[in-house]
Length: 308
View (cartoon, rainbow, N blue to C red):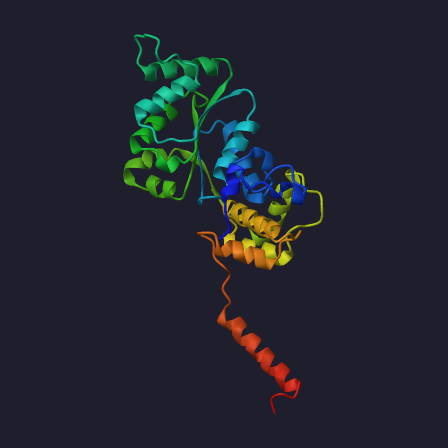
């Protein structure tokens, strides 16, 4: 079994061996490692275009580990200063807690006595920011976990608008379960307000190698390719192109290679990493290839005179 304690930094001893400044395949979303892969760049372009156009609700969905949180943080870094952002990484909040969190993000003193309800105070603050040519955008990560009542509360805020634009924009990042929830009848009003949607796909086989090389380069590696083409193909198929699984498999492959004192990652290390990692699977050998291989063996034996 390959130990994964390196995620806490205890197994970072291979850094000097491979000439790295930092661990290249950590699981924490870090925009320093952002790579301009087609699915992420397309999603980022859709988000920036939709927000600049003043659209109310925008949705990005993707399987676990496809990079939604990293994309969300990248979007935060890319938004112009004219945007006021409220980022909720853990949206398991009831409407009251959600409103309080939104108020704090907008600079409202929740504890200050007021004759107005918190909802009215948020509304007034949104109008103030609009008068200052500031746009307010709420970013919800793991939006599939937000209670229905909180989704409805956000929808009501999303209804606030001037004659020309919305006072509040909302970007929801969620797993495919978010689409299933929004398909329910009682959430149809919110569903109909989503003007832009994007489904984040997994990486294709030709993108996995570039992704691995990019993370190594960002980490300070400057030598020849560490991962053999065969190892990259195995990692690509074993991870199904999911970046989080690619990171896990690449990290474990590095650890195995280091443990053996070898400066290269081949198919054996990749295969062992896949066997050791839950939710990954070794590529299956189909019967077609087995039969083809058997035919070639027989032909070879006949040609060598072993079968008459």
